[in-house]
Length: 271
Ligand code: GDP
Ligand code: K
Ligand code: MG
Image (cartoon, rainbow, N blue to C red; front, side, top):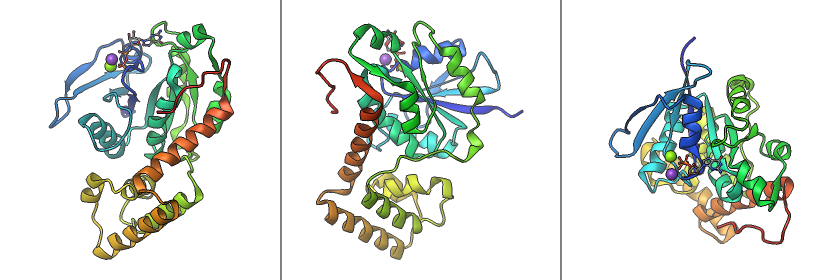
Protein backbone atom coordinates (compact mmCIF):
# COMPACT_ATOMS: atom_id res chain seq x y z
CA UNK A 1 0.00 0.00 0.00
CA UNK A 2 1.08 3.59 -0.60
CA UNK A 3 2.23 5.70 2.28
CA UNK A 4 -0.45 7.79 3.90
CA UNK A 5 0.20 11.28 5.21
CA UNK A 6 -1.41 12.59 8.34
CA UNK A 7 -0.84 16.09 9.67
CA UNK A 8 -0.41 17.13 13.28
CA UNK A 9 -1.75 20.59 14.09
CA UNK A 10 -2.39 22.51 17.29
CA UNK A 11 -1.85 25.67 19.26
CA UNK A 12 1.65 26.31 20.65
CA UNK A 13 2.09 24.42 23.95
CA UNK A 14 -0.87 22.12 23.35
CA UNK A 15 1.50 19.13 23.60
CA UNK A 16 2.14 18.55 19.90
CA UNK A 17 5.80 17.61 20.28
CA UNK A 18 5.09 15.34 23.24
CA UNK A 19 2.41 13.53 21.26
CA UNK A 20 4.52 13.43 18.10
CA UNK A 21 7.31 11.72 20.02
CA UNK A 22 4.90 9.26 21.63
CA UNK A 23 3.36 8.34 18.26
CA UNK A 24 6.54 8.13 16.22
CA UNK A 25 9.19 7.17 18.76
CA UNK A 26 10.80 10.49 17.77
CA UNK A 27 12.63 9.06 14.78
CA UNK A 28 11.91 12.28 12.98
CA UNK A 29 13.50 13.90 9.98
CA UNK A 30 14.07 17.56 10.75
CA UNK A 31 14.62 20.35 8.27
CA UNK A 32 13.14 23.70 7.38
CA UNK A 33 10.09 24.47 5.26
CA UNK A 34 11.08 25.82 1.83
CA UNK A 35 11.56 29.57 1.97
CA UNK A 36 11.08 29.96 5.73
CA UNK A 37 13.06 29.12 8.85
CA UNK A 38 10.20 27.22 10.44
CA UNK A 39 11.15 23.70 11.52
CA UNK A 40 9.90 20.83 9.38
CA UNK A 41 9.51 17.48 11.10
CA UNK A 42 8.04 14.21 9.94
CA UNK A 43 8.04 10.69 11.36
CA UNK A 44 6.39 7.34 10.87
CA UNK A 45 3.79 5.94 13.25
CA UNK A 46 5.25 3.25 15.48
CA UNK A 47 2.07 1.23 15.07
CA UNK A 48 1.98 1.46 11.27
CA UNK A 49 5.08 2.52 9.37
CA UNK A 50 3.12 3.30 6.20
CA UNK A 51 1.67 6.33 7.96
CA UNK A 52 3.82 9.44 7.81
CA UNK A 53 2.97 11.97 10.48
CA UNK A 54 3.85 15.50 9.45
CA UNK A 55 4.28 17.84 12.40
CA UNK A 56 3.08 21.32 11.42
CA UNK A 57 4.07 24.57 13.14
CA UNK A 58 2.09 25.45 16.27
CA UNK A 59 -0.47 28.16 15.49
CA UNK A 60 -3.64 29.77 16.82
CA UNK A 61 -5.16 30.53 13.45
CA UNK A 62 -4.89 29.89 9.71
CA UNK A 63 -4.70 33.54 8.71
CA UNK A 64 -1.87 34.61 6.40
CA UNK A 65 -0.11 36.72 9.03
CA UNK A 66 2.86 34.53 10.00
CA UNK A 67 5.09 31.88 8.43
CA UNK A 68 3.67 29.32 10.87
CA UNK A 69 0.10 30.00 9.76
CA UNK A 70 0.98 30.02 6.07
CA UNK A 71 3.03 26.80 6.23
CA UNK A 72 0.25 25.05 8.13
CA UNK A 73 -2.62 26.14 5.93
CA UNK A 74 -0.75 25.59 2.67
CA UNK A 75 0.06 22.06 3.77
CA UNK A 76 -3.58 21.32 4.62
CA UNK A 77 -4.87 22.76 1.34
CA UNK A 78 -2.14 21.79 -1.13
CA UNK A 79 -1.01 18.43 0.27
CA UNK A 80 -4.51 17.40 1.40
CA UNK A 81 -3.33 14.97 4.11
CA UNK A 82 -5.51 11.87 4.51
CA UNK A 83 -6.30 12.91 8.04
CA UNK A 84 -5.55 15.80 10.37
CA UNK A 85 -4.77 15.09 13.99
CA UNK A 86 -5.62 18.24 15.94
CA UNK A 87 -4.06 18.39 19.41
CA UNK A 88 -6.23 20.47 21.69
CA UNK A 89 -5.34 21.67 25.19
CA UNK A 90 -8.41 20.57 27.13
CA UNK A 91 -7.70 23.17 29.82
CA UNK A 92 -8.03 25.91 27.19
CA UNK A 93 -10.83 24.48 25.10
CA UNK A 94 -12.48 27.64 23.75
CA UNK A 95 -9.27 29.16 22.47
CA UNK A 96 -8.05 25.88 20.96
CA UNK A 97 -11.34 25.24 19.17
CA UNK A 98 -10.80 28.42 17.19
CA UNK A 99 -8.07 26.61 15.25
CA UNK A 100 -10.14 23.42 15.13
CA UNK A 101 -12.95 25.23 13.31
CA UNK A 102 -10.50 26.61 10.79
CA UNK A 103 -9.09 23.14 10.18
CA UNK A 104 -12.66 21.91 9.66
CA UNK A 105 -13.16 24.74 7.16
CA UNK A 106 -10.41 23.20 5.00
CA UNK A 107 -12.60 20.12 4.60
CA UNK A 108 -9.87 17.69 5.68
CA UNK A 109 -11.02 14.78 7.87
CA UNK A 110 -10.14 15.53 11.44
CA UNK A 111 -9.52 13.73 14.70
CA UNK A 112 -9.47 15.71 17.91
CA UNK A 113 -6.89 14.63 20.49
CA UNK A 114 -8.04 16.37 23.65
CA UNK A 115 -4.75 16.58 25.51
CA UNK A 116 -3.86 17.52 29.13
CA UNK A 117 -6.80 15.50 30.44
CA UNK A 118 -4.67 14.73 33.53
CA UNK A 119 -4.46 18.45 34.31
CA UNK A 120 -8.18 18.95 33.70
CA UNK A 121 -8.99 16.08 36.08
CA UNK A 122 -6.80 17.54 38.82
CA UNK A 123 -8.30 21.01 38.53
CA UNK A 124 -11.88 19.81 39.29
CA UNK A 125 -13.02 22.93 37.49
CA UNK A 126 -14.96 21.69 34.52
CA UNK A 127 -16.14 18.49 32.97
CA UNK A 128 -16.01 17.92 29.24
CA UNK A 129 -18.45 15.37 27.90
CA UNK A 130 -16.29 13.85 25.17
CA UNK A 131 -19.15 11.96 23.53
CA UNK A 132 -21.27 15.09 23.26
CA UNK A 133 -18.33 17.15 22.05
CA UNK A 134 -17.69 14.58 19.35
CA UNK A 135 -21.38 14.51 18.42
CA UNK A 136 -21.88 18.27 18.19
CA UNK A 137 -18.63 18.82 16.29
CA UNK A 138 -19.19 15.79 14.09
CA UNK A 139 -15.61 14.58 14.51
CA UNK A 140 -13.99 11.79 16.55
CA UNK A 141 -12.67 12.99 19.92
CA UNK A 142 -10.21 11.07 22.10
CA UNK A 143 -9.23 12.41 25.54
CA UNK A 144 -5.53 11.79 26.20
CA UNK A 145 -2.57 12.68 28.33
CA UNK A 146 0.35 12.74 25.91
CA UNK A 147 2.87 13.00 28.74
CA UNK A 148 1.51 9.97 30.62
CA UNK A 149 0.54 8.04 27.52
CA UNK A 150 -3.07 7.75 28.69
CA UNK A 151 -5.40 6.70 25.84
CA UNK A 152 -2.71 7.28 23.22
CA UNK A 153 -3.22 3.71 21.93
CA UNK A 154 -6.93 4.43 21.57
CA UNK A 155 -6.04 7.55 19.60
CA UNK A 156 -3.78 5.56 17.27
CA UNK A 157 -6.59 3.04 16.69
CA UNK A 158 -8.90 5.93 15.82
CA UNK A 159 -6.30 7.35 13.41
CA UNK A 160 -5.95 4.01 11.66
CA UNK A 161 -9.56 2.78 11.78
CA UNK A 162 -11.80 5.65 10.90
CA UNK A 163 -12.75 5.71 7.23
CA UNK A 164 -11.94 9.12 5.75
CA UNK A 165 -13.79 8.26 2.52
CA UNK A 166 -17.19 7.98 4.18
CA UNK A 167 -18.21 11.24 2.53
CA UNK A 168 -20.02 12.39 5.64
CA UNK A 169 -17.42 14.79 6.87
CA UNK A 170 -19.12 17.93 8.17
CA UNK A 171 -18.20 21.59 7.81
CA UNK A 172 -19.12 23.88 10.65
CA UNK A 173 -22.23 25.75 9.55
CA UNK A 174 -22.36 29.41 10.46
CA UNK A 175 -25.06 32.08 10.54
CA UNK A 176 -27.48 31.57 7.60
CA UNK A 177 -26.62 35.01 6.21
CA UNK A 178 -22.93 34.05 6.22
CA UNK A 179 -23.75 30.69 4.66
CA UNK A 180 -25.76 32.33 1.91
CA UNK A 181 -22.88 34.71 1.07
CA UNK A 182 -20.41 31.80 1.08
CA UNK A 183 -22.61 29.79 -1.22
CA UNK A 184 -22.87 32.72 -3.68
CA UNK A 185 -19.08 33.04 -3.67
CA UNK A 186 -18.71 29.30 -4.20
CA UNK A 187 -20.87 29.62 -7.32
CA UNK A 188 -18.10 31.79 -8.80
CA UNK A 189 -15.43 29.17 -8.04
CA UNK A 190 -16.26 26.53 -10.63
CA UNK A 191 -12.57 26.19 -11.55
CA UNK A 192 -11.75 25.01 -8.01
CA UNK A 193 -12.35 21.37 -7.03
CA UNK A 194 -15.65 21.01 -5.20
CA UNK A 195 -14.03 19.79 -1.99
CA UNK A 196 -11.93 22.95 -1.65
CA UNK A 197 -14.52 25.52 -2.69
CA UNK A 198 -15.88 26.29 0.73
CA UNK A 199 -12.42 27.04 2.14
CA UNK A 200 -11.59 29.34 -0.78
CA UNK A 201 -14.99 31.03 -0.43
CA UNK A 202 -14.34 31.77 3.25
CA UNK A 203 -10.88 33.15 2.46
CA UNK A 204 -12.22 35.35 -0.35
CA UNK A 205 -15.02 36.51 1.96
CA UNK A 206 -12.33 37.50 4.50
CA UNK A 207 -10.52 39.32 1.66
CA UNK A 208 -7.45 37.18 2.31
CA UNK A 209 -4.85 38.75 0.02
CA UNK A 210 -2.76 35.62 -0.33
CA UNK A 211 -5.74 33.68 -1.66
CA UNK A 212 -6.96 36.61 -3.77
CA UNK A 213 -3.57 36.60 -5.51
CA UNK A 214 -3.31 32.82 -5.83
CA UNK A 215 -6.68 32.31 -7.46
CA UNK A 216 -7.55 33.00 -11.11
CA UNK A 217 -10.80 34.91 -11.44
CA UNK A 218 -12.22 37.12 -14.16
CA UNK A 219 -12.95 40.79 -13.48
CA UNK A 220 -16.64 39.90 -13.63
CA UNK A 221 -16.25 37.14 -11.02
CA UNK A 222 -14.23 39.39 -8.73
CA UNK A 223 -16.86 42.07 -8.90
CA UNK A 224 -19.71 39.59 -8.19
CA UNK A 225 -17.79 38.36 -5.15
CA UNK A 226 -17.08 41.88 -3.95
CA UNK A 227 -20.81 42.71 -4.23
CA UNK A 228 -21.71 39.64 -2.17
CA UNK A 229 -19.23 40.64 0.52
CA UNK A 230 -20.42 44.25 0.56
CA UNK A 231 -24.03 43.09 0.96
CA UNK A 232 -23.10 40.92 3.96
CA UNK A 233 -21.13 43.77 5.50
CA UNK A 234 -24.20 45.97 5.16
CA UNK A 235 -26.43 43.33 6.78
CA UNK A 236 -24.09 42.82 9.74
CA UNK A 237 -22.82 46.41 9.90
CA UNK A 238 -19.36 44.92 10.29
CA UNK A 239 -16.30 44.11 8.21
CA UNK A 240 -16.27 40.72 6.51
CA UNK A 241 -13.26 39.37 8.39
CA UNK A 242 -14.80 40.13 11.76
CA UNK A 243 -18.12 38.66 10.60
CA UNK A 244 -16.28 35.35 10.17
CA UNK A 245 -14.40 35.68 13.46
CA UNK A 246 -17.69 36.26 15.28
CA UNK A 247 -19.36 33.38 13.44
CA UNK A 248 -16.61 31.06 14.70
CA UNK A 249 -16.93 32.31 18.29
CA UNK A 250 -20.73 31.91 18.18
CA UNK A 251 -20.24 28.36 16.98
CA UNK A 252 -17.72 27.63 19.74
CA UNK A 253 -20.07 29.06 22.37
CA UNK A 254 -22.82 26.68 21.19
CA UNK A 255 -20.46 23.70 21.28
CA UNK A 256 -19.27 24.56 24.79
CA UNK A 257 -22.82 25.08 26.05
CA UNK A 258 -23.75 21.60 24.82
CA UNK A 259 -20.72 19.63 25.95
CA UNK A 260 -19.08 21.31 28.94
CA UNK A 261 -20.13 21.71 32.56
CA UNK A 262 -18.31 24.33 34.59
CA UNK A 263 -18.26 23.37 38.24
CA UNK A 264 -17.40 26.71 39.67
CA UNK A 265 -18.43 30.15 38.65
CA UNK A 266 -15.33 31.19 36.75
CA UNK A 267 -15.96 30.37 33.13
CA UNK A 268 -13.06 31.05 30.82
CA UNK A 269 -12.86 34.17 28.78
CA UNK A 270 -13.11 33.68 25.04
CA UNK A 271 -10.31 35.99 24.05
P1 GDP B 1 3.96 21.95 21.78
O1 GDP B 1 4.39 23.37 21.90
O2 GDP B 1 2.55 21.87 21.30
O3 GDP B 1 4.88 21.12 20.97
O4 GDP B 1 3.88 21.36 23.25
P2 GDP B 1 4.93 20.44 24.04
O5 GDP B 1 4.82 19.02 23.60
O6 GDP B 1 6.28 21.06 23.98
O7 GDP B 1 4.31 20.53 25.49
C1 GDP B 1 4.21 21.74 26.19
C2 GDP B 1 4.34 21.47 27.68
O8 GDP B 1 3.23 20.72 28.14
C3 GDP B 1 5.56 20.64 28.02
O9 GDP B 1 6.06 21.07 29.26
C4 GDP B 1 5.01 19.21 28.12
O10 GDP B 1 5.76 18.41 28.98
C5 GDP B 1 3.63 19.48 28.70
N1 GDP B 1 2.64 18.46 28.32
C6 GDP B 1 2.40 17.94 27.10
N2 GDP B 1 1.38 17.06 27.15
C7 GDP B 1 0.96 17.01 28.43
C8 GDP B 1 -0.08 16.28 29.11
O11 GDP B 1 -0.85 15.50 28.55
N3 GDP B 1 -0.20 16.52 30.44
C9 GDP B 1 0.60 17.39 31.12
N4 GDP B 1 0.40 17.55 32.42
N5 GDP B 1 1.57 18.09 30.50
C10 GDP B 1 1.75 17.90 29.18
K1 K C 1 6.52 24.57 23.18
MG1 MG D 1 6.49 21.69 19.78
